[in-house]
View 1 (tube, rainbow, N blue to C red):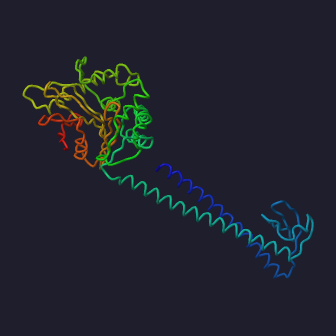
View 2: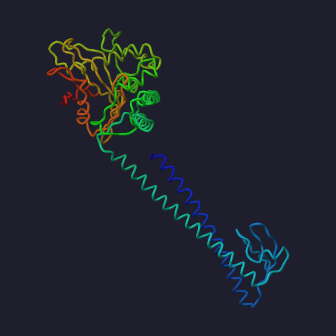
View 3: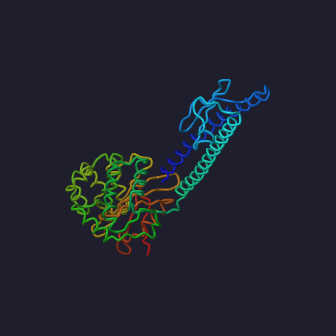
Length: 397
């Protein structure tokens, strides 16, 4: 929207300048003609000569009269002036006729000049209006009421989020654009996901329709939160070492999709890093489960090489197996006065982007999702920015 308005305003500026320039040029020409005419009149008055001329050329849109001093006068017209039909090339015209045509010519140029001025004024007014509209749109964008979220249900929100990701230095943004567009055109369309921003506390997608819309158009698995975040941080996220293989079960659906679907090939190339990062980790005897993910992050030397991009992870504690695993994750982009969190909620569920003032606000929004919570009294879920523990979600009853 902003780019279109900028293009329109720039076009208006160009054409206004062009018309203004043409108007000024004709004003100068007309002034010269008028001055020449007035000088001719003054000379004629001083010398008491009769102003006569000879028709030199007649065309469909103009004719030329040359006076007795061999000074040519060109007359341009849209409607043939009175008396021209009675003369032809070489005829002498009377002073009365000559002066009438000169006055008609001056009136013609005056009206033409006035029309140019009116057009320029109208264009200027349009430019002012469009500039005000552009400023209003920009201000509205900058002052968007937060928190705000979108399911990226169409091309406008998808394009905006992809632009944010590219600006922040994320990887495979074109692939992410393909994934989100594909989901919006199939599952999102079936579920009626909107291409707009809303209050995250009031957003609720029809998960059943999302699943039906995806499965009706695809014979392979959709991506989930872990796969999406890993894609966007490819090359930004590094590890000094990884596990040689994954023997767990918590990532079984992730690894099945990665192993069998071609579109996830870039993730498959770093599968060991993927499972080392997200897979279950046993809680060390005597330690608190909230420390386990941070300890694993440090042990394998994970690092995000960016001052704007971070990996936000919600880690679930399973007290029966005494392990923790990454139950949800997404990419966090830091701005000077707000945060943008980009996530895929789950397999065959929407992509979502959320803008918040601060991390406390984001954690409050995440706490609205009951699927992250276990039974009453169980520890967690724990939230980490990269490998640093930043808080625990509180169930919003």
